[in-house]
Image (cartoon, rainbow, N blue to C red; front, side):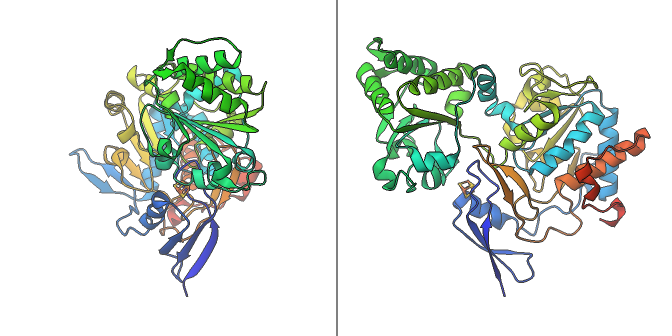
Length: 458
Ligand code: SF4
């Protein structure tokens, strides 16, 4: 009898929906149906059935071809390559669980590596602004239950976080927002007429990369001063009208995305957005939230802050202390300056999403990809190690975009012999300890670790 599993988490976008239902075959090896998820989440679950999913590591040969090798060999190569490198870069972690993020910390310390995650090319500027200016935020539950004015600034959830508007921000009926969408005024600030803009009551179609000026204009109006006739392509009256709507809200919620972090000004745009949020709190209640991209990209920020005190761009090369300085210790900057001599891609696709010049620099050195699937990063790698898919055939803790932790479950059995990220990193760490003749340092929790003691059995 097929089994319906409820309360499943979707391992795709930062909405981290945890109300998915999955029908699995009676032997728990195949996903038959997916309910409640958007099309992206549905496809992700069905993709786990793909019979061509890699089951063994694949290593590039001297003639350029790739050959399948046993896990023991891959782990040995991984450990030796990291130890031989002067400054390895371990990057990714948007799409894995917190257990894997924690386990990689031991390897990074042992290798004297730089540890970085996808925030570096995504909401990293938001972190910089938060360091400078704080983060007056809340949970998505508060947005759902209280927000009567919702602002989407430089983000397009209808495409990037498809169920965000139905679960948290526009349509749901919350405790104080029982009329749902009818009770909410939606503003969208975007240079394009996106599908989110089409949903909004007011669309401020600003000139691209002029967000900073527009934030400033809002702040100026809120303080009772006059502004020029047109700012960032938006007429003064429209800005005043939007500022008035935000000011008169019972609870104003500002969501922002790559339209702010990837355009001119970057962290300064977010700085201004946070200051606007603070200014609005002189008049009403207002909160701001970064539309974090991957389902657990908030995870490395949490886990590594506990471990090292920094959320990303963590330089462990000194051996005695961690150091963070985006611009100096960030992945793209390190790659462009040719400062790293080994690249490890985990749970992301730097091959597809890094600028080509950065990829060309990184490709001069050993490149190891740890990923459940074939992707650009696996196809250009010297070694590709498949792992289980967190949230599909591996359980684990993830942090939603509002930093709320959620326990994701596994819905099907993993491919035989394929380890999780955590198991793989633990085995690489043990091999590094063997090679350096040092004793592994395990946290108390790790004494109960679940992976086989002898890699030969997997
Ligand atoms: S909105 Fe995001 S988390 Fe929710 S089902 Fe779609 S892809 Fe998955």
